[in-house]
Length: 309
Ligand SMILES: [Zn+2]
Image 1 (tube, protein in one colour):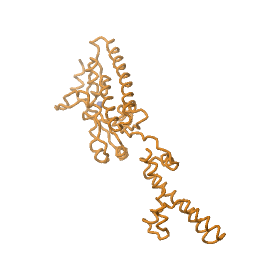
Image 2: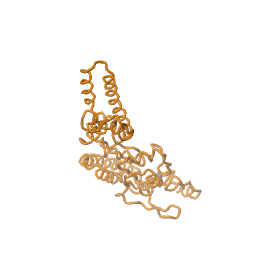
Image 3: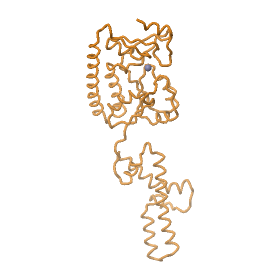
Image 4: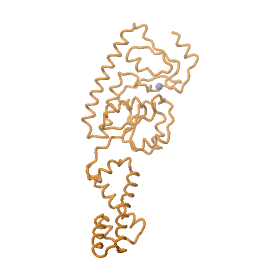
């Protein structure tokens, strides 16, 4: 974090002379000016020495204009560089560089495929992470159509968290198109997958997040991914994960108690889309749904008729 201000300072300081000498090929600059980084005081020294010799001479005016112009030039080039790299080098960090102050730690950029995962990452990451969800609240993670903005968001990601188990079919192409170097982490890596029949094929049921019983396994995978990407935050991530897991276990106990209050024969839930298989298995509830595992499926007459049980 101390190296970064030094690098930015050198870039700002040398930026204009390099631009003038190398890119523009100007003859105005001497090699000496180039290597001294055209420090403002070079201009000021010239100014003072010429001032003492001839008041209001052309040379004096030229030197004054030259000094003001070069400082302004450095400022404009520096600002342009700062704006161009503003994702990696936020403007307030560039200002800190000019004052030779160390940079604050940069937040880890985490992109989650949908909002439930984003919430979990926020709980575990705390203020060390900045989280973006690709699918917005109320969006459908099954049939999402990514935008060019999503590709840009992914490109800037340090960590990408997905549900996995085949939920984000749209993610593979998006990742390839974005050119991101982050390898997606499946939050369900530690969840035993529930297998189901869908259109005559056996597939994984992706809806593991709908059962609180699986949430601690999600948290463990997310914490491991954050630790791997940002080892300096290990203690913070583990402390947050422990606290959050305790909350989720309390919630799990609450769900068991509430379901337990319903007579076993009446523990039936009617859903449009079969998204609560894990919940049903964990809490002893029967879920009836005419629509299959994916929201892309449609209810069949036979499916609806089968509900009359
Ligand atoms: Zn679903």
